[in-house]
Amino acid sequence: MITMQYSFTLPADYDMSIIDRRIRDKGPLLDGFLNLGFKAYLSTRKGEFGSHDNLYAPFYLWQRPEGASDFLCGPGFEALTRAFGWPQVRTWIVWQAEISPDIASAKFATRDVLQTKPYAPLADIRRAESAQAGADVETGNALASVSGFEPTTWTRVRFRLWREIPEIGEHTQAYRVGHLSLPQP
Image (cartoon, rainbow, N blue to C red; front, side, top):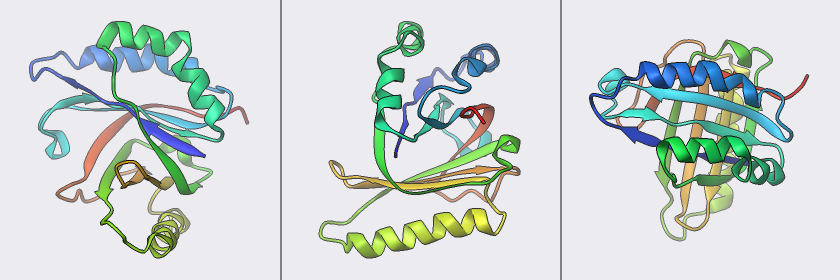
């Protein structure tokens, strides 16, 4: 599994209802996409949840890398890049992904990107991050929980979907979920 996210920072005076409408209209087009674990259509407005910017920032969980490749090479992503520009697509190898049967009721998301120190004990970090991802869903706190790492810049990602907005940490980016595309049942 891999996870990916790209983000568009929009002007402070940007009419975010354009993004809301785009999510509403385009979101269902990825429902049932081959190899998709989920796609969370995410946005936030400047000042909301402490955000410094207006953002449109979808987050994906792919069951197989071919799904990500098919999407990025497809007409939907091509149309997106024509509308908003060519984004940097961040990817992480998934260590743990837990998904609640109630995932469809997600209204909010949080994402932390953490730097891994050189020579850190990766096996220990992986165990701890995986255990936390599992516990977040098992306890009913999160509706989905993904942890992963990227070994080029040595960053780790913690992504969670929530029914209610949790307490937001200083370095946490929070979003509203406008639509959630899921695989075929």
